[in-house]
Amino acid sequence: MAAARFARQLLALAPDGSARVTLYGAEPYAPYNRTLLTGLLRGRYASGTIALPTGGAAVRTGTEVVAIDPGARTLRTAGGETAAYDTLVLATGAAPVVPDLPGLRTAAGALRDGVHPLRTLGDRARIAAAVRSGGTAVVVGGGVLGVDAAQALAGAGAGVHLVHDREHLLDRHLDAGAAGIVRRTLASLGVRVHHEPGVLTALGANGRIVGFRLSDGTRIDARTTVLACGARPRTDLARAAGLAVATGVVVDDTLATSAPRVYAIGDCAEHRNAVHGRAEAAWEQADALAAALAAELSGTPAGTRPPAPPVLLRLGGGPVDVAAFGDSTAAGDDTEVVTLADATRGTYRKLVLRGGVPVGAILVGDLTTVGDVADAVARGEPVAGDALGLLVGEGRP
Picture: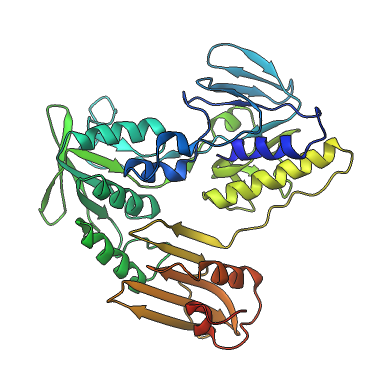
């Protein structure tokens, strides 16, 4: 996604004819919006609607880059082709994390049949086919992707179990009160949530996963298993080329890596010890780098330090509508917390302030004020008037 956004922006901003962009991708599909895969799964979108414009860039689908040589400024594809570049932008994304669960893999180390990550269009197609064949689906992981996948599978007609190894869903972003609303909303869709702090064991038969056993002995049948346990930056290409790599590919405030004329953006990039792993951050980085390189082509170089978006979490389009910003779970003597909860309507609103300044917020079930609240957190200025009014749309910072 970051690559497509960068290409479109650079070709729109650069002086006519001064920039040529080629996008290489291992998948057999043109660039698409991965954040809409769950919507595609539940039939909210048609497959063609999630394609991303590239601004006229050359797109090489099914062409994996397996090596780069920063000294020679060349890259090599899996097919043995070598190509030269003037500037290289790494947007290699992230790979799904596969949990180390007993019984999940075969003796040879491969995932058993019926187990699927959800990261690509191919993954989505395999999950959709499995759901059409009937049976119960189990989602492993109760973070953003897990919750979204669970509601998508329920919307597609599957019976769904969601297994999470923390005390409440979306624990990195929500407090227990907000997570409770999310759980009740999922329950209304038929999703059964299990909090499993112990060891989850996969049960296999005839080479495929047929269920899971919880630490208390409870068995959950599963014809389809979706892994939603997070993602890890793809850094193998950069590491093999000698670039600085920590959790992600290390970049400075200009999004430059440790190699000359090589940049990194999106889920693979680590800026100031942080890997954002969110579409909004990837787009901010793509826009910033495109603007800087376009300015360079026109002879007016500019800095590229990308702003840090305040949005930590956004699930929209229902039935589970959630947004979280900034330091949304902060607590302590220096914080003031304003909360408005309505269990009947399934809504929860929370604003965290320090010295009258909004530093975090959570909205569940009603996102009508999401723009105002996000702006208030990003602006970092004291709220004028009643903080509760900001949550319900009657106040402005």
